[in-house]
Length: 191
Image (cartoon, rainbow, N blue to C red; front, side, top):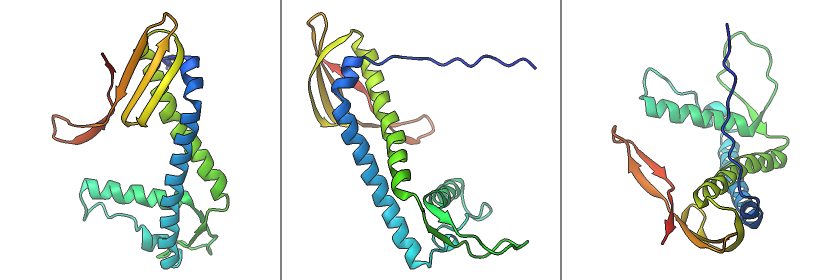
C-alpha cells in the first residue's frame, strides 16, 4: 500500500513581532500555569475528601443511561483525574475493582510547567502567526499592545515601509447551522 507523503503548511511568524511579544507570551504561559494549578488544587481537595478514590470523584460514565454530551463530559473529567494524579499499585485481581485509589502526582510542578508551556505556547504562537499573515509585511516595531489578549486586545505595529497598522482582536459567540454555539476570535484591522 502506497502512503501519501505528509504535507504540513509552514507559516513563518515575523521574528520582530514574535520577539516584541515574547514578554506577553511569558505572561500568558504563567497565566495558563496558574489556571491549571488552580484546577489541579480543586481536584486534589475533592480527591482528599473522597479518600483519593478516583471512582468516587470521577466515576466512569454509563453510556446506556446518559446522553452523548453527559457521557463525553464524564469521560473527559475521568481522563483529567487520571492525568493529574498518580497511580497506587493495587493487588492483582481478575475483577475490576470498585475502588481506584490514586495519589498526588509525584512530579506535579514539572508537569504543570510543561503542560502550560505546551498549551499556552502553542496558543500564543498561533496568535502571532495569524497576525504575521494578516499584517502581510515585515514588522519593524510593535508600538503597543493593550487589553486582554483574546478579548478586546488592540495591537499597533510599524511595518518596515513606515506604515502604522492597528489590529483589534475580540471574542464572539457564533452558532453553527445545527444551532451549536462556539467561540471565535476574529482579528480585524482598524482603519
